[in-house]
Image 1 (cartoon, rainbow, N blue to C red):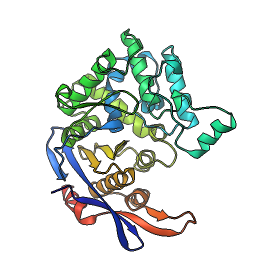
Image 2 (cartoon, one colour; image 1 turned 180 degrees about the horizontal axis):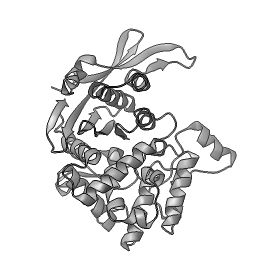
Image 3 (cartoon, rainbow, N blue to C red; image 1 turned 135 degrees about the vertical axis):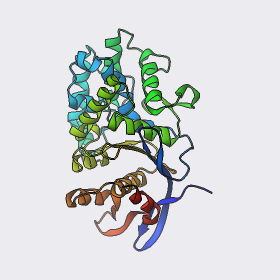
Image 4 (cartoon, rainbow, N blue to C red; image 1 turned 180 degrees about the vertical axis):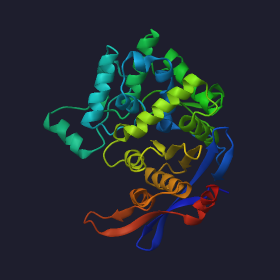
Length: 341
């Protein structure tokens, strides 16, 4: 049997589409406290794991050596929209490492918002690697390479010292040996390793609590968490789920999207980490799934609940602005999560 239907899409009052998925809630010891669907099937975490990829940047001392501030550290964990503040911060991060955009090996793509695309068009300019949603992460990798005294060229390759450090950090905090996992290449050219959802969620439980981590790593995890929830705009951008949810909940949760319907979260006050995968890779459904998880697990005040509602049950409007349908979480599927707190 396949994974359960977790999200429905309605046109009028009729269900038009259904999204299946799996999710797991785990504590820092790796204990599964709740699960829906097949959480044992390995998935590629994609960009949902960026905060863990940033651990070596902090615990090595590179972030301090480069004098990275919290906003820049948040950008190192970001899938940003390519807005001016993101591009500028990535450029400054490279400058602090004595580099420029030519050192980036992430490739170029247009900004996410049409407003920012229009700015480039008016200037008769094309996007550069700084506009890539992963440019902050790559600037962090390059800064780490400079601090370690290793070549910057080829820093995206699996056998490069930077990627070996990143692979080791993720494996240790998640409690898995990534050398045993299937390896692919992410959209920005770095290695990505498939793993079950439970160890992925454990990594974020540890990130949010520091439990079970050595002091240096616990301090790095705390710094990364605080940088991201304190600078949510740098993690995503205007109108984006990660930015709006972290801003609305005032540091109570860290959330991070990844391509192909993956999402992770850390909820320190409960000691939980969350990981989920929408089977068909739809971002719209993965966002609704994560919103439903947060709503089920946390006791939200009125303002928090209202801010989350637009993601938990988004309205669908046509090009004339008419309300034509809704996206909604399947209530009975998420009901067991409400019994955890």
